[in-house]
Amino acid sequence: MRTWMLAVACSFIALAGCQRDTSPAPVDPKVAADPCLLRVGWDPWEPYQFEGPDGAVAGLDVEIVRQLAGDAGCSLEFVRGSWQELLGQLREGRVHVLMAASPTAEREVYARFSQPYRRETFALFARAEDAAALKEKDLQELARAQRRIAVTDGYYYGESATQMILDQATREAFVAAPIVELNYARLVDGDVDALLDDPFVAAAVLRRKGWTERIVRLPLEIHSGDVSLMFSKAGVSADTAGRLDAALAAHKADGSLRKLIDRYQS
Image (cartoon, rainbow, N blue to C red):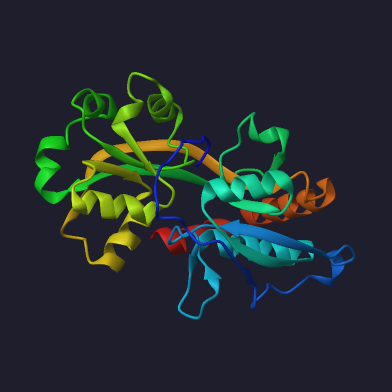
């Protein structure tokens, strides 16, 4: 998810902030000889990353990072921002870890990646009254019909969709926003005709906004591939990144990672 940069003229900007983790995972004394503090970037994307009722950062990706940090002997500090802001901070070493990132050659210049930990899918959503007219169309057909499709700045929607978003012949069909929820407001207001988002994120947004009857899911799905944790080369040593990746491999091997993912996505 989240790989390219689009220029977005928008006055709605996510406020960046910093939140210390108040409930760190227990540290295994066997691996605590080299303690570390990791600044983890996040942007609201429920159920993967969000702020809970108690003000603490929560979600599937967050639970995974907390567990791995405990296994690797690290403590966490969470930094909120838009995805593009966080990518810049990770490049500079001011943010150390980003979650749910797609490995690319461009990013490997300044970041290391863990092994994949979950697969990501995007679906197309539209206003209920437009569903019948749009449900059989793919992205190419929507673009040719001059339909406007909302995407989130910096997100990766798979190779084919990404090429369309960047290609001069089709890019005007895509309207980018710096944060996910702005896309839903634009769809409700009629500023766009459809939007692309993770179906579990969409379910959370629509439930919270009370829009489950106004916005519906269409048949189109895009499998964008596997996502990993991304570590800043400027801020995270190869040894620390290796310990975190080894912890991830252990949770994959014993089945605990699969159980955690299923709990959020069931």
